[in-house]
Length: 270
Image 1: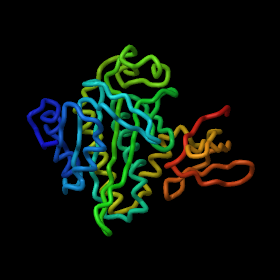
Image 2 (image 1 turned 30 degrees about the vertical axis):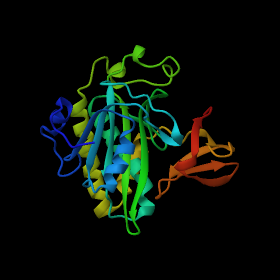
Image 3 (image 1 turned 180 degrees about the vertical axis):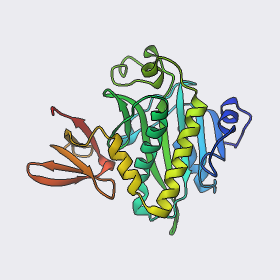
Image 4 (image 1 turned 60 degrees about the vertical axis):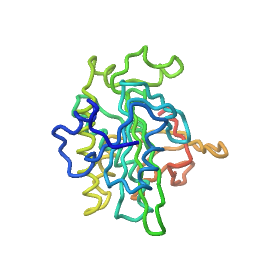
């Protein structure tokens, strides 16, 4: 994958981009297997902090728990960011919350109310709009990068979705009744990502956690937590997220901390 600005999408992204480093280096492909896979390779090749890896379509886009992510050409935004944080590696998983909040803030500006489902999906009326996959790349004993992959259903029509996901997925265009200019929408996501990322470096994750709570549709709901490994289930009330981004659930009178890496969340009757 080579850096290029000769594509109309990347040219438009660069025009009036209001960031210092997020998205200033763009790696583009018309088609790729996965922007996260490309970004991990580029991170090991010293791609700069804030580099944007973007494709018009992905052949093997992945979500959390290795689920496939439908990524048709020209209909959405399929991209990954390479971050080189100064904060400790234990805080890296909270970059998922950072990404969700940045997308939610940009989405709010389009007039669409975002609903974040813990930890990494943005929904509207129980239909998925956005998926986020955060992965770590260890570069040396004291150096690592965070790859934040984001897939957004922007200008899909109902018929664009495969029949098996048509009832569980939607797009910004379907909700708004009109197409959204992808490059300008992405510019706002990059702006909010940089703004929040800079605040993490100086103030920690407090503001991101509070904004995540604002947009959450998981908190104060009765949920079922399903462990992906052994399929164990617990049901309880989602109370909050803690300072590590873990979901706090009250189940059978006990307080349980749920980590994002190995579970699925299902809402049950409230």
